[in-house]
Length: 472
Image: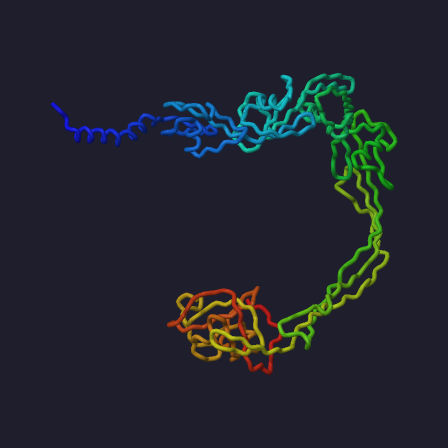
């Protein structure tokens, strides 16, 4: 049976069209990509490792670790491992060096840095001790510190003790050995002496335990002082003036370690009692209204008296015991001076364009505003529409404190976002701020509260409340 030429061409075209899909299916493979210990299952057509990394948008630095190499051929089921390098700071033997490495095992990192270790040396990673083969956590920066082992030869009174330590200081080495340094002990060299990996000779002289009874307290301490007075001075309890001790100040430290201190004190006291000053206000015609200035700060007066007092404080008594007190003299040392606060009385008329049109005002005050209506008075189940002036409450009427009302009844004002109004009512006010209450009828009531400014409109009244006090 002969196949026509057209049919052969058609079949050949089918094969050519399917060829890319066939080739792609041959290159398609599943691999595992592990980046910084995070595994990813990836299906890829990449032929080599570097192609896989490029497709996965994995960036490599010079010190990063990759296995297998970027030019290796990629096969189905392969595992590609990428470990990004981190900055490592190494402090050893008093020197600090930095390196970039993808290695995460401390002992290998130190070997890369040329640091030799002994089995007794201690490694700290980021301030914490770790094993030599412990794997470092992933991170951009790690610090490695090597503490060299040092031999310590310690003489404690008549006893000799030898031990090794990786502590950074001599005091730390003693702490590791459960050797406690008490107040008064003498360690030579001092506890802050650094250990550098070399042998060190040290001497510890233990202080004698003492119990010192003084005034109404008992103090337990230690001292290497040869005398009672020296021990008291070391403890911050040196005898002064007429003080005395048992045993005496020049005696050697007692075998039982008990010392008693008797304090004796004679004081000449200058006792002062303040005389309070008053306050007064003063009008300042050259200062604009609602501005104040201190004309005189005021000054307390003083009465003084000289008193001679004698005290004793034996250890078997509770605190100081007053033996004698005499007033030798008393007088007024300084007369009080009143505080004078000036308040401005100068009136300056200004104009301003507002949402209600241009206004002319002679005073403006920052106030905290609230709103009210006949049945929104803050009293449950109570309504009243009559204001203190006798008018029926509606928008355009505001309430102020009783003191303001006495001076400002009927005064015209302007409040932003409320409009022109007159003062017609009285409210309680607030104890820490200037306050107004914006009136509404029930039909147009809007409940809100917040800071605003009240403008007092011209004409300027003949009687002015120059000093505005808070209500409440």
